[in-house]
Amino acid sequence: MIFDLIRKRNGNWKDDTLSGLTVALALVPEAIAFSFIAGVGPLVGLWAAVFMGLITSAFGGRPGMISGSTGAIAIVVAVVVRVGNEHGMAIGVRDLGIQYLFAVIMIAGLIQVLFGVLRLGRFIRLVPHPVMMGFVNGLAIVILIGQFGFFKMPLMEDGVAVMENGRKVMTWMDQDRIMVMGTLAFLTMAIIHFLPKLTNAVPSILVAILVVGGISYSGVVDTKTISDVLYEGWDSRELSASLPVISLPTDIPWQKEGVLFLIIGTAFSAAMVGIIESLMTLQLIDDMTETRGSGNRECLAQGGANFLSGLFGGMGGCAMIGQSLINIKSGGRGRWSGIVAALTLALFILIGADLIVEIPVAALVGVMFMVVIGTFEWSTLKTWGKVPFHDIFVIVAVTLITVFLHNLALAVLTGVVLSALVFAWESAKHVRLRRDDSQEGIRIYNLHGVLYFGSVREFSERLVPSNDPDEVIIDFKEARVADFSSLEALNALTERYKTAGKRIRLRHLSPSCAKLID
Image 1: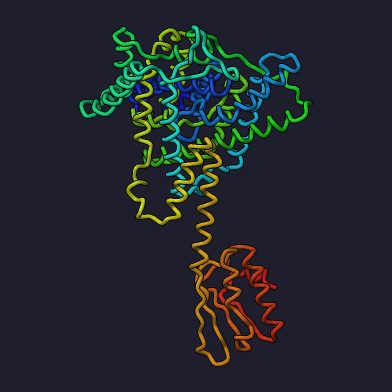
Image 2 (image 1 turned 180 degrees about the vertical axis):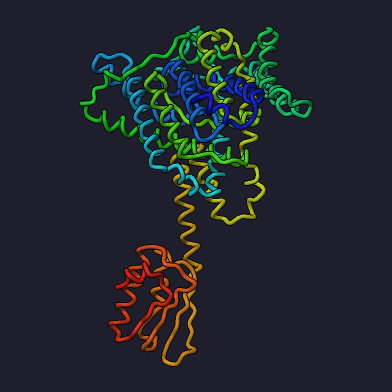
């Protein structure tokens, strides 16, 4: 079945294969860094990237989109890992936090599958464009800020790393190393920008990584590599190779007060964050490629991938906007590109670990800087004074929540709510009531617009029985009754006119609404 899916891809084998190799290289440092954030070992993040990437690429709703372990999920699960380890110390179970993590990810996967079964992925169309722009800008800034962490190193005293709360204290590198790393990152960016002007035979990102990697490996310069990132988190510069095994969370004390609520609550948060980030990334890729993916299918694939990731000892994840853009810009359009990336990453872990740890971080930082430049919606700056203030407010609000709270679900939901409130307010201002006294003894009110909870109050206040003749007609030919609040307002209005001894007729009202009017 998987080969049938591959054959149905868009794009071509060469572009998909080369872009997949490029993405695999870019996945390594972020998977390791996100493992560190979550408080687990590097293989937990790396194998999560393999499972997420392979399953979603083969069965997901958006060919060309890359999934893996992400910072958004890492931040959500970090608390449950820490609390789990504390519980483990109390009952004598070592590393209990990672079992909490696996349970959270498996349950989150089931929740996402349920979302797909219920076809809730289609609700992504309710996300307004200003929210999308704020989301993209916020993620671009988060990615940018995250790269500066690679310019730091452990603070040393008497040859020993200073520890605080169980983690190494990080400080900025010395100026010379920052200059070297910055120069290599700039060289990477220059190759990515200028090489496509000469040839498109191979992805410029892959060439840039290989060129800068060759400079680093030759010993011409001393710069930070993946092995240094490993040492910063786990006191080891080596990446041990081992196949994942089924890791059932059998030691969790479910009967302990608060444990069930903690795990279920965290799983729901992780599921929501994963779905929202994945569907927003899907929509972005749709816009870039002028094609359309399936949100419901993506929910199913994300859920299945997370469940299997947790079952086999991974930290789960979701769509990665940075790596997805790297893939698209490197020519990857089909499912094969994501499958190649996942399988290549698995080979790196199993047989190429010694080589992969020598990749200079500067090359990958340069790649991500270019991703930031290509991701940020610069048009928001050009249209600052040309679009309505409320749209600018929504863009800024979503961006700030994404950057400072690192909560993508909250950012998007806040943006949607703000946009809905603005729409309700603006719609209420466009409801008009025109009076027609052309017929003797009868007053006709022609209603224009949508009658709903936001406009019923003004509508009701403008109709006063004591000011009208004995017979009143309200014509709904150019209007629409939208909700229950409107029906209740019409019921109350007819009662007011009856009490005043006057007759009121509602003309051109839909049959379904007319039945509900007393």
